[in-house]
Image 1: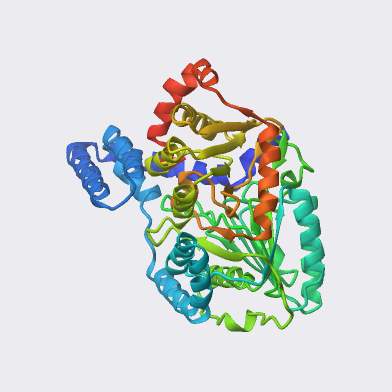
Image 2: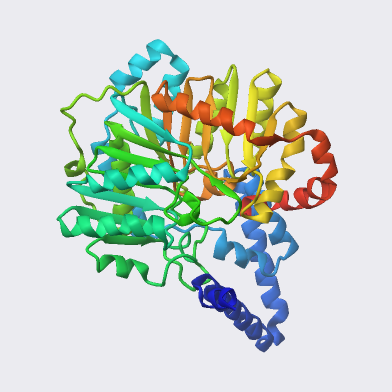
Amino acid sequence: MRKILHLVLNRVFITGVIVLLQVGFFVLELFRWANHYVEIALVLRILSLLIVLYLVWRPNNPAVKLAWIVPILVFPLFGGILYLAFGHVVISRRLKNSMRKTEELTRKNMPGNQDILNRIAKENLPIANMCGYLNRYSGTAVWENTNTAYYEDGLPYWKQLLKDLEGAERFIFLEYFILGEGSMWGEVLEILERKAKQGVEVRLIYDDFGSVLKLPKHYEQFIEQKGIQCVAFNKLVPLMAIILNNRDHRKIVVIDGKIGYTGGINLADEYINYKTLYGYWKDAGIRLEGEAVWNFTVMFLQMWNISRDTDEDFSRYRYHFTEKIRGKGYVQPYGDTPFDNETVGENVYLNMIGYARKYFYAFTPYLITDNEMCTALKLAAKRGVDVRIVTPGIPDKKTAYWLTQSSYQNLIESGVKIYQYLPGFIHSKCVLCDDEIAAVGTINFDYRSFYHHFECGVFLYRAEAVGELKKDMEKTFAESEEITLEWCRKKFMKMNVIGPFLKLFSPLF
């Protein structure tokens, strides 16, 4: 009974009911105008046709185009309206102006660090080119003098985060996709409230849709009353034109400009296995201490300025290190946005796959790939690279699980090794290549991460965390089941019927 009550009262359900009522009202209006049915139907069909032509013309991924074109052509009366409501992203003038101002501030405050790029180029030109790509298209610099620590589980990540939050003296920035009431977020919030009373500036961004089932309504007002500045990103409102696709999927913590965190770990009890939902929840995070934290500071303030429509300068939040930090290797935190037509998150993975000579390993909760990614993985395996991908053994979303499994046979036939994590659900988003480079962040191997969400990650070259990630991956392979072609053939319905059908619409999931 409580589950039913919770469903009925949550905002997603209420929004869905309102949307259905709006659709019903629209249908009734059509009946009222029944004498003009032919004219109305003609207008709607022309609208759908124009949208199909627009989609064909746009320089989008073909799979994304096809995922919209098929339902529009199947349902020509309402397909065009559906696309306008949920598929077409319209950026308001206010948002455009805010983004422009923020971009100017970013260029002003983010150094190019050409001297570091030159040093990397002398060691390894392809790596320098990757770092240069991120500098140009993500607007982020590559750094030295940064310590890195990799966390293979949510619990030690959280324990260290609590210690670092306790040590904050000037400011704390947090940006998360999901907050959930419970022990994990409760202890963090207690520290934030206490620090705010001590005069530490505390700011919080959380995604409203990501947290909708876990927080009370108007939670940002509750947080503001504690002296914490708060933004509920892209608020869920009951309107047909809501853009549900573009969510803030980032997980960023910045403490005094000296310490930074990211990874797959949100602030809810399942991420530290205090709550069991899908077997053991395996996740990953990374902690930075040093100059590279500046990239995360800028990324957070970009999102803050855009959300609040301000042009607050970044420079007063930069920490100038006088103490020597002797971190190994090179570190480059980077971000990705759905508004620039550059799939930075996917391109980092593609560059790493292309660079691989010995091996390419990946953790991902979802393996819902476009043709470019699938081809790159298969080509790497065919040229002799040891390509291994770990996906969940227990799913959190059945549809995404079926879509993930529908990719197995094609990849395995080309030599890619697929593993399913037997203890439960793996939520980590990590890639590793040739003992040299790695990326740890928030970016899944799926369309939502590559095309729709705000994301972030850390690109690592010969940093301490690279070796730590490799140890975790080797241990995880041993805890996982390698999927065989025989296994795939036994799943005939999923692999040959359900999967291919869902794959047609996969960019929409």
